[in-house]
Image (cartoon, rainbow, N blue to C red):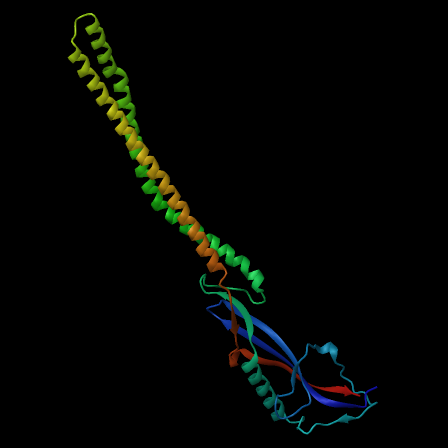
Amino acid sequence: MPSRYEAAAAIRITARYDDTRAGVNHVAEWEAIVFPLSNDASNVTEVDHDPRDFIDTAIPAAPYVLPEVRIDSPTFWKALAVQVRERLYREGTITIFKNSDLKIYSRVGESAQDFATPCETFADDAADQATAALGDRYEKRLRRIQVAIDKYGDQAESAAADARGDDIDMVTGAVFDMLSGRSRSRDISSSMKTHRAAQRRVDAAAVKVDTKVAEYEALQEEFQDEVADLVTQWDEKAKHVEEVSIGLEKNDITVSDMALVWIPLP
């Protein structure tokens, strides 16, 4: 059984945390008990309560001890409300998380671990966009090289056909002509020179093809390296998470309920 009851104030405050840049517009209720009652709000203790925690009839078994302050004065209660608002204005904050590199913020109540997921998704999307832009530039360069490969490949095939056809026919004809006495050795030498010249054209075209193929492969590797660097850069950006405290403005704090209550003491 309590030996006495002493006066206290049960307070409920509605506070709106607002930060346009962070996209925060969060309304919270803060409940507290002021005990013992005095002319300042230094004895405010955060306590969850609702009307069901109190009864509205007196219990005569123990005395009710009046405080030194004028609990019957509206001025006292107005002053107490102002002091409580001032204290919450100074001390009331919520914490969210921010990624400055990605320019995104967490939701109110979202943990740093949970916030890591949208950061990673945002970074992946940004890396994909950067890769697409990079791919457009490389595609134009690769296409030009492919055109050159096709061109030199056609030249190589044409030169090879010539070397296998007309030039070889000339050499074979000259050999038969000489064996039959219708041609001289000089003619065979000239035919062989023509054949060798055709082969050199084949070799030169093949070298050009090989050079362009190597250039194509090197450019592909360069593109892949740049993509890997992009992914690494965005992965690092996704990790740059910091805490941000959002305070209150005075006009966003409302004492929505205040009641005199009696606290049983042993």
